[in-house]
Length: 436
Image 1: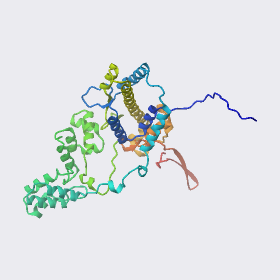
Image 2 (image 1 turned 45 degrees about the horizontal axis):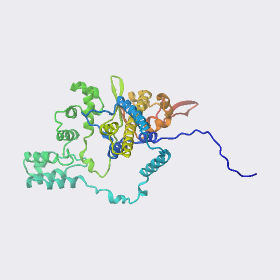
Image 3 (image 1 turned 180 degrees about the vertical axis):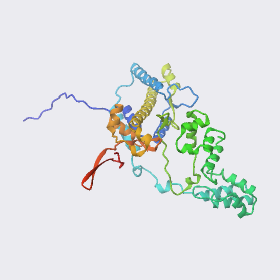
Image 4 (image 1 turned 135 degrees about the horizontal axis):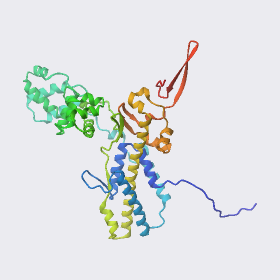
């Protein structure tokens, strides 16, 4: 049989992921801190992307209505590019490969990166609370009596930074007047960390809130009189007691969450990892409201300066125009992808709340068996999308703080236990909770 070369046509179908689609998927994977870091990097690298601050007109801001404007802008950009005959031969496959290579580099193991210093050479030396306060005591302009009193105060702090003896006892031990002891104590309480050398958490939080010039605020009133209600998440009750809207209570809650209830803990040898929720589920009048945590998340807009330059067409060269077009499209796609990410998280959480209402009302024993497909079918999304959204995303509920994935993957199984001559049928879920 002779060998020969032939040309033939074969019709095939394949899914090609554009860079825009990959960007949307990448943002779904990111945690809240990683998202903030990514946004800040994009702001630095893309001159067409700007942060929108409060009080400024937000042309392409972060609302759903503005998202539609961004989508329209992307369409306009496509038309402008076509009319202006953008350079041909744009290699999407090469661009996609470069994107994948860059992504692999960004997630490469630490030890595989070039010129990486050893971890022990970059970790800061641990400073304990005692030495940190003693250093500040020596740096302040205090007389000898105050320094002696200060040494006794610092020596009697526990690991959380609270004072374990009373000012009267310090006055008796040192032989100095009580007024002198109280004066020195007030000075030390404003050392770093602020709120140290107090008697309890309430006093420490009050000093921290007043140090921020928030004396007389809703946050101070909550700390003074409603800490118990705050711990039990009775936000509506607090709002009624203080005669303020629930929004002000939630704003004050954000401020209080930024305080340190145990000021000495940050200098403890045991490191605590704090989790900031991506979304809040709040019960209001027997209904659950879903509020996304936008605190610290930069609000983005497209630079009107570069848009005007492109529309006026007064550019020095075609290369400059092409560069601005690419940056504007990149900025618009990032904003639209962030909107899509936030909407997807909201919809998934909304579905979980519908399924797990009994758990939110009554606690862990009423956790309902739930799998990815249940939520995916409910919101008409693919299971892989739901999986990406729920990974490393946290929700604050009336029952506590949970990862979204915690509510998924619980399947029911049956365990039959013999009792004498009969059988007792007990149903448990995969988390080990008795269902009935």
